[in-house]
Image (cartoon, rainbow over the protein chains, first blue to last red):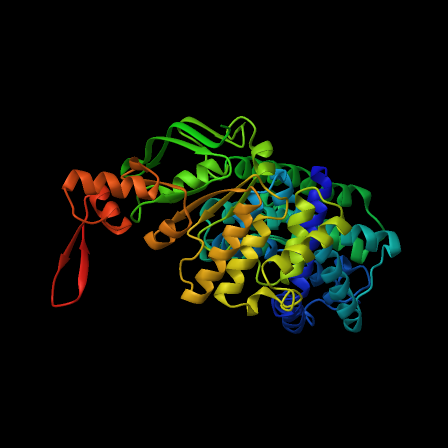
Length: 254
Length: 266
């Protein structure tokens, strides 16, 4: 069995695990929807679609949806299950099998990508009653699903690093909170050019900004290849770094 | 005589903030194939660390270890294909069913889906878990989990089975069931390397034992030979128990205090 097949077998197990704990999936839908509704309620009237050019004719919910999608993709549940395996001893059982070390970490990341596609699709569906549509059409929707799930892989990879290094559920859980400052240092409420200068600088060095702008462009406009390309470029670089770090840590795991 | 486990000057050091800790200090072991070998020692003596090195779960600081003829540091995957491992805590995924866990384990050892399913059924029968096989492990009793853990270590018919305290926390009936399983497994030719804190268990099951204390082997031999040696050395009229051999080897004392209560003093 090749490492890819092993990762597939382990990924399937991870998906089964997720399906058997729907209570762990519920917050990944509820909390992002909560943010969407609250942000729309608080700022929707400030930015009417008729007179707000950056909404491209849609309402403010469409502008806010990428933040909710990224939040949903940043729960890193793969890492939380991994730390459970570590604490319960099952991870050692897997390590004692002739399984490629890379399959042990990549299997979970593959499952996280698959879960994220489903969760993102559900969130887009739930956003439809708020008047949101994906202006870039079916191709844009596919790009949006792929980009969001790649972000989910990166964030789960980051949290897996914490899980592998600390072997602690508490520390891994705390890793999830890191996303909040990252989320608020983005053009979350208005486009980057409308931010104050310090916030604009902070947003410009924050990689989440480029993923958010790519997702936003896919929802509000036809496919803007330059913006979308920057988003994919960011996840490609971060993805390579995160997978490489995961492989390095698992190979030296004692 | 072929050796199932062979360790030479096996050493493990941990480096921490408070300096270097020598967990295992130059252990030599030779376990002939087909035996049940007991590895005894007090808490923190280095039993689990030694087992984790022999099973590729921990890097070796210095020395060498060969299991089923394979150098565990040079070719860990080849070693993993020849060994089965059941560690101190029954390492199981509570969300899977017993059958799913065994099938997954079979697949990871390279079996096809149908072969892994067939082997899972055989193992569920072996450890008497057929009725519970399609239930989630979360609902299993401690004894059932131990038996399933044992079964999962046997998926690929290993040459050497490492068991780290396989009966700790089990009630007497479950413990005897596990002993029976181990005898059956050993009768099929599998070498068993067993760590335990229960000296009665070692006496019942093991062909040979080694006692480790402070990271070094302090006694090694058959249970009877170790008892004979202590009897002769101390000039005892009757055979000592393995408990007494253990206490003698590790420098612990058993003293009678407060009537019938006995306490082991370090």
